[in-house]
Amino acid sequence: MTEQHRLPYADLIAFAHGVADASGEVIRPYFRAPLDVTNKAASGFDPVTEADKAAERIIAEAVAARWPDHGFVGEEYGTT
Figure 1 (cartoon, rainbow, N blue to C red):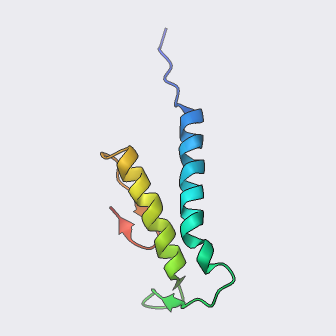
Figure 2 (cartoon, one colour; figure 1 turned 90 degrees about the horizontal axis):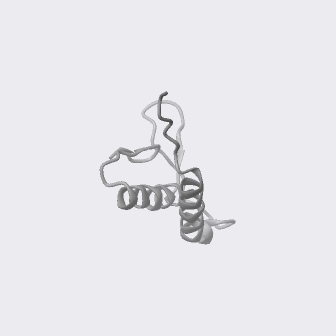
């Protein structure tokens, strides 16, 4: 019989909640505040704010700390 491997879903969900809470704390000051929106696209419009960048940094750093051998693909900074 083949051995089944189960992902630790409870641990992954707890990690995701923690990262969401941490990024929420960082981006909360931007909520309902005037934002500087820049266009990161060479053609068309692909808006980005400092809140977007801050949230992605928190998430990428948390993933790197938890799983140093994993890569991360983000919308604002690309692949790390």
